[in-house]
Image (cartoon, rainbow, N blue to C red; front, side, top):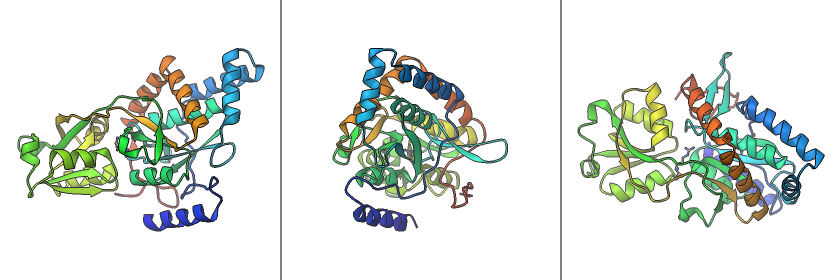
Length: 318
Ligand code: ARG
């Protein structure tokens, strides 16, 4: 099904002109942007409209030069299996709404650039291919600025520092707690397809039975069902899953050189990259990012869904 979507998207890309082509999936609008952010954006818009300061004029000029895949819109691909970065928060009426600090930052950047935000949800490897085919403007999915990806995207400045962990279940915590212990053909070790965690698996446990799955959610299910022994997962994400599934145990931190998250920017879009970096700098400087992180963590500890919605927009049972 996913393959088919992608194939269709690729065909659409080829049919369309070089620059203009939409995402492979109907875009979603984040309902989770904080009211504070919205208010702030409104304030900024007013200031900009009044042409108050030199800095504002520069921003406006930069935004005017920016071209995006769909005019007037900022199309962002994400993979919502990754709380507190991106996930669905279940509202009081049971409706899932995209949430997480990546999504709040996406809204902030769109507001900063004067663009309307559209979010395309795909599995993580889909985020990479959407960027590669230039079907979206940005990929925001807790992306590590892996130099191997530089051929298919540009990276923004870092906006968050995370870490990597080896995860198992409580009953196995004393067994699978070193690289040596998991580096055996009879030990199954999971990682998400296309992620740097796959590299961590092949580097640190090359002899293990490495199992690549499309969603972090799938990895968690396999661990809990006893079908997988251990997995490489981003630390904050593992901690967040742990809140729902206390049987999970983080057994050790895993060293990784390119630590931190950056935004994947459609390759060669210099003006957009500059605008994104300006927005990130501002959000980091004025405490907005900190606030987004706090809000995301709070929302993530409530009822949430991690994965893709079905065609009717409902959470699927995993
Ligand atoms: N940081 C890792 C990478 O860039 C994993 C990101 C996975 N993101 C997600 N939303 N599932 O490869």
